[in-house]
Image 1 (cartoon, rainbow, N blue to C red):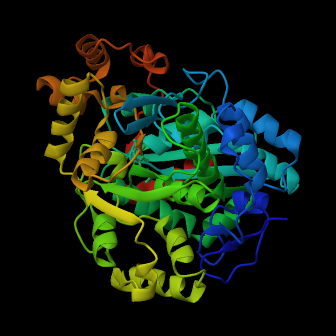
Image 2 (image 1 turned 135 degrees about the horizontal axis):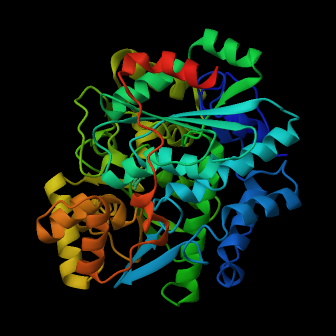
Amino acid sequence: MLKYVSTRGEAPAVTASEAILNGIAPDGGLYVPAEWPTLALDWEKLKNQTYQEIATQIFDGFFDDFSVSEIDHIVTKAYGQQWDDTSIVTYHQEANLTYMELFHGPTLAFKDVALQALPHLMTTAAKIQAMTDTMVILTATSGDTGTAAMRGFGDVPQTEIVVFYPEVGVSALQRQQMQSEPASNAHVIAITGNFDDAQQAVKSLLAQSSLVAELHEKNKRFSSANSINIGRLVPQIVYYIHAYAKLVQQGRIAAGEPVNIAVPTGNFGNVLAAFYASQIGLPVRQFIVAANENHVLCDFFNTGRYDRRRDFKVTNAPAMDILVSSNLERLLYFASGRNTTEVKGYMQALAERGYYDLTAQTRQTLQQFVSGFATQAQVTQTIQAVFAETQYLIDPHTAVGRAVLTQQAPTGPTLIAATASPYKFTETVLTALQGEALAGQVGLAALSQYSGTAIPKPVATLFEQPLRHKQVIAPQMMTQTFRQEIL
Ligand SMILES: *Cc1c(COP(=O)(O)O)cnc(C)c1O
């Protein structure tokens, strides 16, 4: 059976279901597969398969203590009618560049791909482990994770979901999604301050042992919907395999021919999933890691030093505003040759000094990764230019990826992750297109009219929904508020 081990080497190896329930390993590390599952990726076969069929094979490989019928059930639940396209992920071709539209789920961002599956992975894992506690999903969000987590976990038995989001920095549509969330097990609270403040406070909540003990008395326990959970990462491998298979099917590439993959990056989850895909057999030439003005990762790949000692910026691609990209730890694990002592050293240095330097040897293994960043002005210019040239609408995050692709100019066929619908960020997209930051229903209508595209179904009546969650608190009130809501 496939085991998951910690990147820091001081936690017991566990099965997939245990890793999903634990979220983070007890030594503070992240779970990684002890070996790569052998999935004979036969492109001639894969090219004719549905998204669900490919998902089933990937899940079977990585979650091998789940039964075949359990996996079938999870895939059916996760990738069904809630998607506005039966093929789940759709593609837009522009010469050698393929946009992977990952935003056709209920909250219009790629996080739905994983967060429609994670609740079912978790409740099934609980069944396998005979775990009867209620799982309390606590998350800080810059907008996309929280809404996708609530759409996934909403009204799922044996779960409660608590979301803290910054009052400033989310789009009007994200705020409306948050405040109107109807699920009875959802607790949604705005905080004064930015995403980093919310993130720090959530981390300290999760680390309070007295709180963990009190939850335990009530038969509750923390779980993580963050992309540190292996149950979030594996579902994201699927679309890279699916995309490649479609390119083979369309005759755009020969089976085995390498592609480039460009990903607008924040917590490094999405690009890590592409790396995992390459480790199980996806032919990749280069990974293009695209950052915004919070370009700590870009500096890392270009200098070998990770340095978080800088100011946090709220940008027009807010889901990428982040200074500590948690999932990078998983890449370091593989880059160092599974050297847990080395990884632990980096993470300790980051916590204590705020930076670390890669060894020359480890840095050497990362040559497939190239990185650049886009300023906020470049984001709006890119949205404007892409629409002017091709009548294709992209969101600010995808625009970061597109702008960095222009800088890096890799050769050969390239996949780019289109991570959100432009309708989710009408303020920025309309500013780029017509110089006016329209929000709300007015923004949706204006964007539809300007672009000649339809307002996505999941948000067509969003602004008519009643607001249920209006609480705004200071970050220092988060523990107290959490207690009131959950204990
Ligand atoms: C979360 C998010 C990202 C960043 O993805 P990571 O996996 O954290 O790197 C990029 N774009 C959008 C729209 C997102 O919601």
